[in-house]
Figure (cartoon, rainbow, N blue to C red):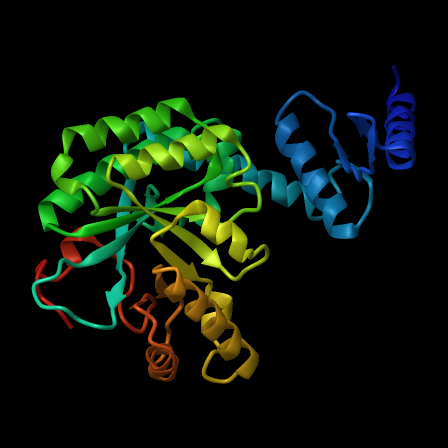
Length: 327
C-alpha cells in the first residue's frame, strides 16, 4: 500500500466513523476520532504522538508527521527525555519531596502530614518535576515501577519521621495488580500505620465505574487507608460521586483557591463545596495557598487543612523540621 492510498484509507475511516458511529446493545453512539500518522524506521511512536498532539492543537482529524519546523525539535526533545528517564532508572536517580498539609485548627501532639511527590535527578544534579516525565514513563510501561518506588519511600519516611503521609493514586495504579498487591503487602507489614496513609484519588468521572476500582477502594479502607479526592472542583465535580466513594478528605483544586481573595464566584463555590463536605463529615483541604490573603479567606471558611507554598514548599526529607515542631 502506498503512502497516498494509506492516507486515503485513514480519511475514509474517519468519515465513516464520524457519520455512522457505533452501536452497543442496539443503541447508537457518535464518535469523534483523530489520527496521527508517522512513517520511517525509528521513533515511530514518538513521531505519531507528535502528529496526534498537533491534530488536537489544530482541531484537525488527521495529521501526518514530517520534519516541518517544530516537529523535528519536539522529536529531539522526546528522544532526550527518553534517554534521561532510562538513565535515571538505571542509576536510581529518583527521590521524593514532601509538602506539608497544614492543619488550620491545631491540636497538641498531632503528627505532621505530608503529601509525597516524586522527583527525578538528572545527570547534572538538577531536580525535575514529574510534569516532564510521567507521561513518558506511562508510554514506556515504567509507570508502575515509579509508583512502587513512591510507595516504598512513603512508608519509609512515615516510619522515620513519625508522620502521616498522602500519596497520589490514579485509576491506572488501581488497575495494575502488581501495584495494588505491593501496596497491600506494605500495609500488612506495617499495621502501626493504620489510618496514617491517605490515598489521593485523581478526580475522574470514571474512577469508580469499574468493579475492580470499587473493590480496591473497599479493600484499601479495610486495610486502614484513608481516602481523598484530589483536585475537587476542576472539570468533573459531582457531589453524588463524592458520597458514593465514602472519602475522608477532599482537596479543593488550586484553580479555585488561588484567587479566592479576589474572585467572589470562587469564594462562593469553595464555600458551597466546604459546607457540603462538612455535612458529610468529610474534612476539607485547600490547595495552592500562596499568600497571607488567600490563607485568611480559607480560614474564614473554616476549612480544615491548607497546602501551598505560603505555608511550606516541597522539600527533601533532610530539609524538614523535627517531626513534632509546629509552625
